[in-house]
Length: 469
Ligand code: UGA
Image (cartoon, rainbow, N blue to C red; front, side):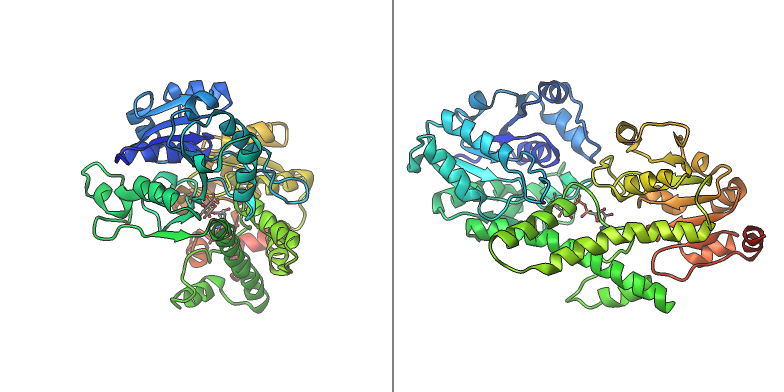
């Protein structure tokens, strides 16, 4: 086996596109397939389509060279050694993952296989998917010795996808075939043996030649469960701290102090303990629902997951109540909104709690001036501007003459605003922060009445008198 592997990646979404350019960065030859010709043309022309650090640079470096883009799956797969399936697994009505794209890709691959090929699931899929892929191949007449199926889940986060891919906590390879395991180990060798990190132009991250990532070999089914269980556990951590934040509000305690104290226990750890308006994005909501459905289908009572979802949904309603209690009534109120993306650092608005809250506030009769550093173009597609919604060019324009300013996304730039300027601009200096970006005392020092999550509200006395008047 040569060091350079011929890889096909099917799907050019976050996972597929990032995997494609990162495999090229690791020295492999890649063909990235997407059935959307417009996407293929854009990628060939160097437009990365998504907002992601390092992606434009890597795309520029490898497009039409070590990474080719095409819409012709059968042509691409013909002489591939490894095919990564990274197509969408959307949520169907009941929460079950819709695997029709995976099935369609598997059937098409089956029609063009002529030599031994490793088929890798990179999309997040339920635990029985590898068996289905195997069955689809066999039903389409592919001999069993011509392929193996591997589960190699991806743990990258949007916004830091490239760095996460190249500097992973772990690489999970789930397969029941030693031959396929050897191929996957070869692909990831530049990371696992540390040689990638020794390169002068390596993408920065926490891994180094002395501390390369481990590769964990498991059964195929275990790898599938590792992915769902990891996302569900992280979502659970967020819902847990959100429930604790509600308790803190009721008891007049400070959830930030509580989270710090909990996170210092190395068994708990400090990450994913940030309270807020609930988790969103294309992964957690979908994956928690899909994992719950997998458990149901397998006859396992995993009611904990329903509770994680219920707390998450409730967190948005509680924030709306908080805005109402800050302003007394909502009809006719002018609000500034900072943030539309589901989290900072991305232009993705899928399942964004910020978008949902804007919709709720408009339904309550508020008029909104919204700003997001990257997600406004996408937001306009689902929330077109109108008499009650305007998109503005920066945080200060969003604050101008409003009854209150709401912080809905944790963009770094929202955590260092000029507070005196905000105070001067707003009609009433009231900030309702769904992401706890500020020290409440600092807000108070700047004359701003400040509501946040799981911490006592800080009322600025003059302003409070004005509102009450
Ligand atoms: C998540 C996982 O973190 C990745 O490991 C995984 O690979 C990915 O899903 C996936 O399955 O593809 P991502 O959706 O990009 O990544 O975003 P996160 O950074 O995990 O944030 C998810 C949501 O949780 C965001 O809405 C964020 O604001 C929220 N969050 C996160 C909190 O409310 N509190 C926290 O402490 C952390």
